[in-house]
Image 1 (cartoon, rainbow, N blue to C red):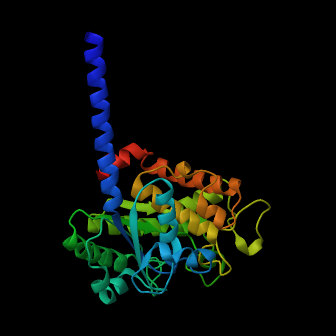
Image 2: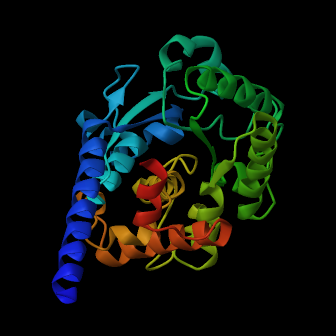
Image 3: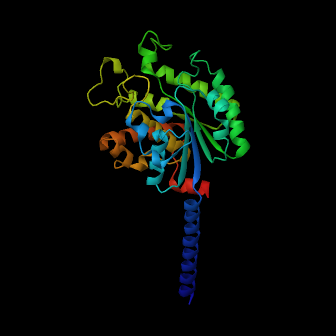
Length: 308
């Protein structure tokens, strides 16, 4: 009698949990989480095949039919069973002030998540000066929060430019290649503090890590080492498909809290971009290492509990 009673209640508990989880998953499918990417060529992936990667999978608010890094992010989330409605608002060579002044009517909507960055040198006219970034990030955060006070805003600290480091015309000329990314990160940390933004995605430091461990060549001007990746494209300024893939992995890990290694060596976007399984896993490992060094790794269960 006691055994039957116990079995009955265990069965009821299981069915209740199954129904609850089923409803939660159904809710996620019917009500996708919205995310907006705000940026420039470093988001729309100038100089690489990523620029036109599955543009139909995302909504380009400027109607330029670009996929870019946001489309990679969309692919990653689909692969792990998450439902995101992904949008982007990008313009070449622009800082956050431009998006604030010229695109406010487009981006002023209710978003669950926002990922954004400014110009690659912090300030086009005054490289290394974060003043404009700090002011614009604060104003953009206020605008976005006016539509959704709970919006999760992420700032992206971008990478070192080889042309700014190895050419005499560059602001970081003569300094180690990792220096520019570290300086950029400091500027974004200041902006995040001023705007009360909790997360800065360390994309530039992930690039530094890839170079330090020998996966990526640190100087494209003297040739690419055997077996190494070139994270830059032909202009030694923008990223290659490898560089943008690493950027997307960092965005994915930061926004969802999931380990980029969970995507695996058969990750679809990497296959479509022509990466080898070893290259794919190596880039995922760099993203994993950089993210866990900063915040620790989360699990899919953690993320589902957070968004339900």
